[in-house]
Length: 116
View (cartoon, rainbow, N blue to C red):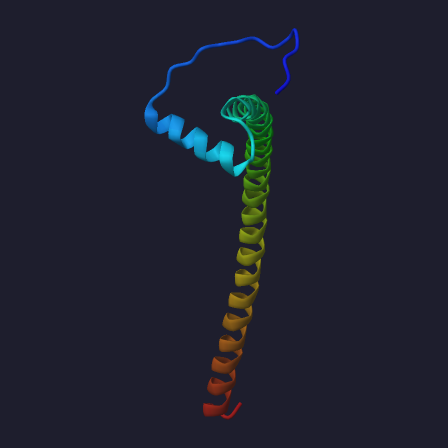
């Protein structure tokens, strides 16, 4: 990394384990320890910004899903009520037909027995 007026020196203390990790990463990426540390720090700020955006997006998605769930719950209640009305009406109709058919059958049986 070339020196320029914007470069600032900063001494840093770290554990030997962390230094070993930085040395390994620097070798892997073919750069100096300093360049590796700077790149990692810079990347962490980018990740923070991305995470903030992702959190905002996730919050919006969550809010949208809650609203959709509320709407669907309301629609579901309306659907259930309408279905209940239809089923009750159909049941009354079917029961009426069953009773009517049974009565006809009884009347026919009585007429048959009495030969009327």
